[in-house]
Figure 1 (cartoon, rainbow, N blue to C red):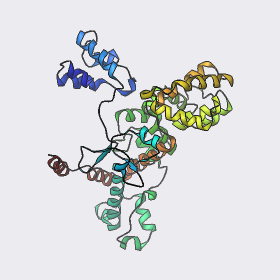
Figure 2 (cartoon, helix red, strand yellow):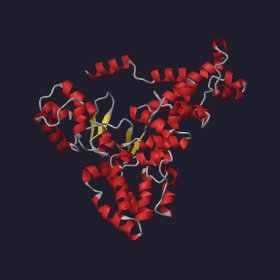
Figure 3 (cartoon, helix red, strand yellow):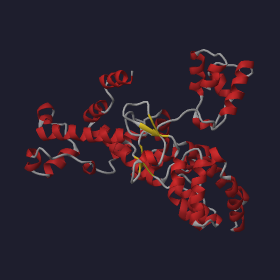
Figure 4 (cartoon, rainbow, N blue to C red):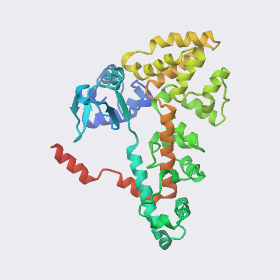
Length: 383
């Protein structure tokens, strides 16, 4: 919308207003209602042309982007294996090939995620360690007790005197009701992954009361589950507004933990095996196709095998089409369960710190932001 709008002569204010009304949960379509919400007439010749042209270029590569935590590792010099160029950021380089090219060549790519929140958690725990070890809270307010104070006390006098003693992530108590109460209110500003407007809206509706609820929370507000039509059925079943049903015991074994709705990538692969007769190798090819179908159109050959396999095993054509639509939805980006579990842990830890150690958590959030002086130095170095 931005690029086409500029090309057609719209002002920057108009382009910003148009782009601000677009949302990924609308799918790969430009909806006239969004244009009207921005104050534009969808039938105006310029706006109609803009919508038509923008729809045509959706999916085209726009620019080379950098994965903030992606690393490619090789035994020998990397520049002898792949083309490398300088990134915009100082002392950063970018490999010119995408992840599918690297995978085809068998190169090892590792995504190191959540470094910002891990830094924040580490600093927050260090703040709490210094504050609690010093006994300063007793002078300020004896009521400022904390479960982490008990951890220090349990470690004995050596902990208070040992300069190397540090509270660790595993010292944070699990399954605290107060933390879940806070999240159910949508009070998640600053919390990892669940502070967006969409997540804040989802939290009171999903009402997490245990760790696995947080795993689902991090995975369900994603383009994949939304485009695949999984969100509303899950919420209705969770709120007991509709019954939880399974077409077979085999499907129940895969989907029972998510109330009969496929939310994770692994569940889609398991469904292909137990309901359509895919081999594990074919299910893995399906997983790869889910990630690449928008660029390469590679999911088509799996449709016939999936639907015919499910029909042969007694599933209805409607259910088979529903599973196929869910697979298409995951092509828009869905979470593996293991990924969601790791993120869910950081959601809980950051929520616990916000709930029980708000001052330390706020200070750590501020400490973990790039400082203005750092940004100025990088800007000057780039010039």
